[in-house]
Length: 314
Image 1 (cartoon, rainbow, N blue to C red):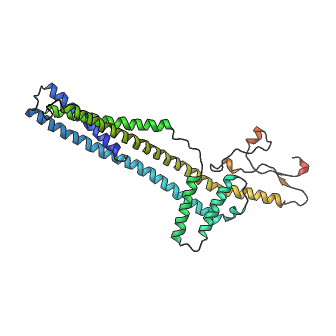
Image 2 (cartoon, rainbow, N blue to C red):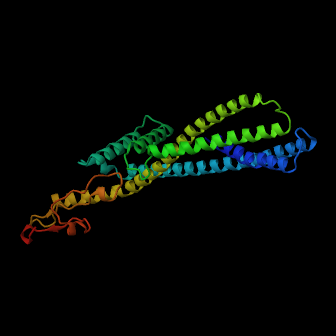
Image 3 (cartoon, helix red, strand yellow):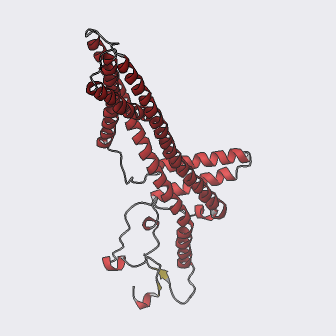
């Protein structure tokens, strides 16, 4: 796709300017077939075709490469940020892994952190091997994490992109070939009508083949572009979640400890069932918010642990 689309754009644009110009001037000036003026005009239009199609191809290819590089750089930067955040959690918050997590998604996070910690503490691996293994684990975690895409790839969108690719390539090849045949006929190179049907069939076959190829490459390029954009969104959510994860877990564990060790031995203190739920602030901790019999109005309030003695009412 990196070469086919710029090629067909340059071919169609150059042919759309040069060959119609030859036909208009040839008919307007009533030039004779195979005459000197016709040959001069044909040469000038051929040079014009090259002067238009080559720059269009070059600039279109450069634009495509810049967009591809920009998206790849963004993806690479987000992956590097995710690697830094993960290493920071592994180095500073190993105690997070020691708690039992009931949520299925939290178990996945626990296994993920435990795997990274085991790699970090593996003295048999060199520093380079550890970094490669950590990056490999992070890539696996990113691709295995399920986050709902905002822009799903539907069959209709793929068909639409394929249709645009087909008509663009077919129109460029067929239009350029038809204009070229007209110029060759005006120059007297194609004099017999018997050669025209054969050339026409060959041109149609070539145009259809180029159209089918361009349709598949356009659909594949669109799918790859959308997948990279969705992957960038996923890594952004993971980065945000990993930054909040130690705070959420430490907060939850702190209130668990307060429930086990009350400050006032004279009272039986306990925490309310309202706790900080990572599902409300982290994209990777999905799932509905648990309902503990709290009204909708109270449910909108900030979820913080509430401490009170039993004799003051529950």
